[in-house]
Image (cartoon, rainbow, N blue to C red; front, side):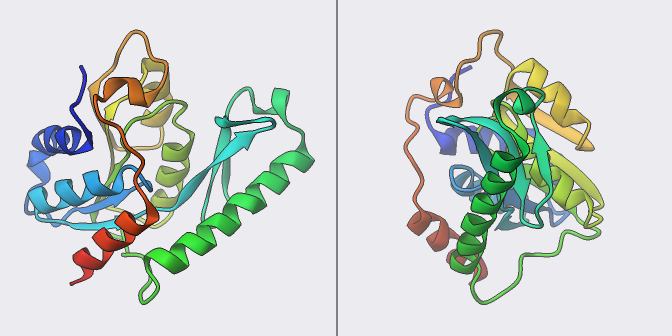
Length: 209
């Protein structure tokens, strides 16, 4: 399956999540690419949209490869191969660097309010696709500690082995396409532009009004 763009993927995901309409779900995006998608899904389902901040931890010498991810409180998920590529000193330094990025983004994204409280709510965590699944796992772990009623992972595309890892952290996983050959999330979109911080902040402001 290939998607025209993120909007197309979001509308298709919203169809699969229709049963949560009018349950006031909290739809949380992993920035930045998933934010426009979460906006569409939240509006379709009659819910609220916000962001959940997690950051990929980059491999030494290869910023595109994730060795894990960290959430806002500093919990880290490490991939199986992480210790083969990085020692404790590097991992701690990378964790702290990504925590600083998240502090800056939180100050940008929601400067006048705290994040929406997921306690007792259906929480749907959205990304535009999963590769290693590290950031999604970190997001789900962070949210589980805040006692949601139900925790759902919703993505357009992911490889099978990644979905199996993510399933352990969510009550439900909704994935539209599980391709046999997976190289990168972008290969499953015709149009896959970067989403800017400015776009994210604009969507969050609209959802506050």
